[in-house]
Image 1: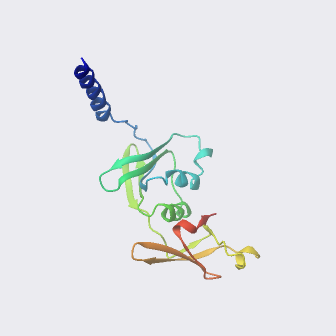
Image 2: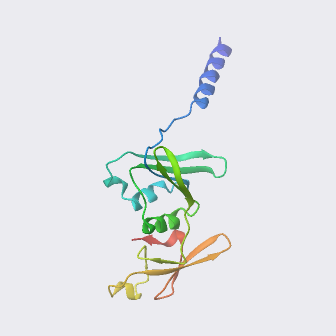
Length: 167
């Protein structure tokens, strides 16, 4: 009897593994895919998703053959500005963006960091001019092997991705 119960339990577990959650496609909008696992909520914050009234689907820790695990965001009726794309590139440099029109991919591209990022990153140096004068923040993007660094244009302090604070 114990063997039969174990067999039934294994069958239930195998069936559960076979079932996949289906996320319905959006008709018009944007899909941000290949977001590093655990970063989708940071991307959602950049996009002010909590204030958006259309359909938003956020997938966390989805399996990916390329990345192992990834996050994904689908937003109905939304497009992205260059400013938003730059901020997403800071948080999720491997992300891809698909523009959807009538349920078809109209345009697909990988986000790309510009050489200079303006008004997106806060300089945490208390002696930086951005702390005492009303000037836009400016950071030069520096890449070294697989790492990316941000150098403040004014005080030249260097920050890694993990040290930065977005505006």
